[in-house]
Length: 235
Image (cartoon, rainbow, N blue to C red; front, side, top):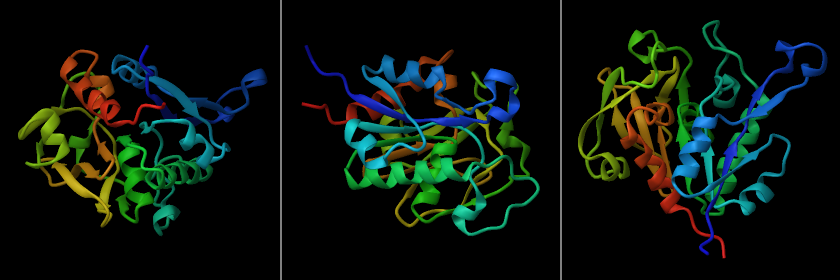
């Protein structure tokens, strides 16, 4: 029997302040939609919890998936927080960045989704727009369907997955890349010029949410299939 790759999903923290009584403690979560994408691609997911040792966690898995979530602390890229910036969790940001750097060191593939793209850029020395005024990037009404298109850069890994030209995507973010890390290459742009996907050796990340799109449009599963195929199988 073949060994299925083990994919580490970096947990998002839900504050216990929103609850009372026995539920007042923080929650560490991974969205079921990401889990389905990983298992559909033939891999097994595990949740990587803040406070765990990043080196040990990355050694255990074959690839790292960074899911969507809360805004990244602006202090991580040398800026003061503006009022439009949302809730941050500095400890979570530091843990995710440590996972990214360790995955790069161990040459384990990385897939980033939305916040995942942003934290990869920050981890590698890039910066973010703390708030995008363009309403095109705030399509919350029906995120299982596309709201705009992006232009894929020819010759990129993203183009090998979805083809050259335009790709319809959804949009659930109010932040985005301001200064691209010198370690990354832009792989797609929105009509207003925002970077919508990035790549590097062993890294691919998108600003949209393909895990939601694939619920009605199965072709978006191909991104996760590509990622799982790139992960080394444990022996």
